[in-house]
Image 1: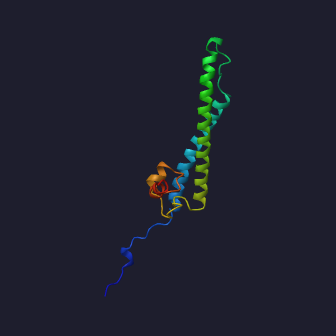
Image 2 (image 1 turned 90 degrees about the vertical axis):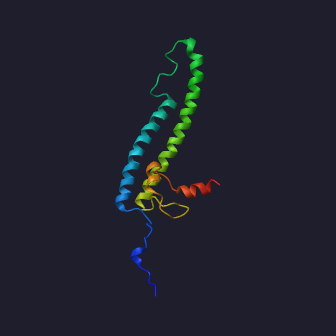
Length: 135
């Protein structure tokens, strides 16, 4: 008669340990600090609160620089919006850490591999689920 041996079965983890969550929290806090700093610089570029713009250049270059400045402001504005969204994603990841749901794929319910979370700490989908959602 065959009996099943529970010690041979590998139980799949359903969540990361508190120690692992703390590691992720530290990583996210570092990324969040840098993201907020980058966001502040981008916002300053859009509002020109820290730069001189074309007011202090000769009139000859003013027309050319205004065109470049408008493009630069638009690009900086778009980058600032993306950065703000990234900050929100990182803040949401911190909430998931507090709720102990961090690192769990919202589609499959399986743990997202550590390697992915280290590269994309705000990820809510495993690569498998992300690929399936793009189909």
